[in-house]
Length: 255
Image 1 (tube, helix red, strand yellow):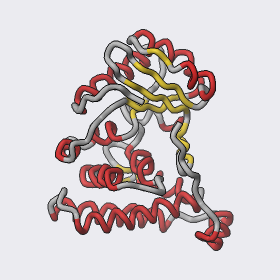
Image 2: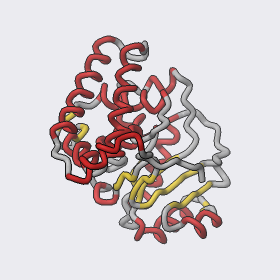
Image 3: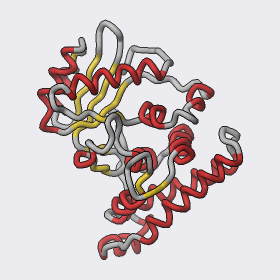
C-alpha cells in the first residue's frame, strides 16, 4: 500500500512522465493506466476529480514482459526499490515499486490487465505516447463487474471529451472495442451491463451539464452500434444461450 498521501494529480502525472522517459531511454514502452490516464486525457472535465476530492496515491503502468530487467533498472535509477516478495512470487505478471525518499508507489502489469476479464495490451502499447489507447481505457473500467460510481464517472469523462471513431488519434476506437467484445461473451455481458448503469447515472448526475450528458449518450449509442454489428463467432453465440446461469467473470482479489 502506498504511504504517499498527496492529492495533486499534476504531481503524479509529472512523476509518471519521468518514469516513462527513463524507461524509454532503455527502449522500453511503459503506458499509464487507471484514473491518472483518464485525468491526463480529459483536461476539460478532469476538474470533476478535484470536485470529488479524488485522491491519487500511485502510478500504474502496463509494459511488455520481456522488459522485466530493464524496468527494474529504470526504477532503481529514479530511487525506487522493487518489492522483493512480489518480484519473487509474481514477477512474471507484476512488479511493485516504492520510493523510500518520496513515498511514491508504482505498479507495473505485464502484457495485459487480468481482472474480471483479460484485456490484452502488449500489441497496442505503441499507439499512445503516455497511456494505453482510449478504447482500452474505456474497457479497463467497463470490464469491472462490481463497478463503482467513480469508475463510471471516469468513463463518462472520457466519452464527453473524445468522439468515437475508427482511429486511435484522440478517438475512442469503436471497431477495436467491438472486436474485443466479440471474442468473449462474458466480456460483452459485463461491458453492456455497465453501459446500462452508466446511462442510468448519466440521466441523474449533476456533474455534467445537459449538453455533455447528451454527448455521452450519443457516444454510448455509437459504441453499442459497433458492438452490435460486429459478427460473433459460434462459440460466442453458444455461450450467450447459457447466459447468466453460469458465472461469466472472475472474482478479483487484492494482491
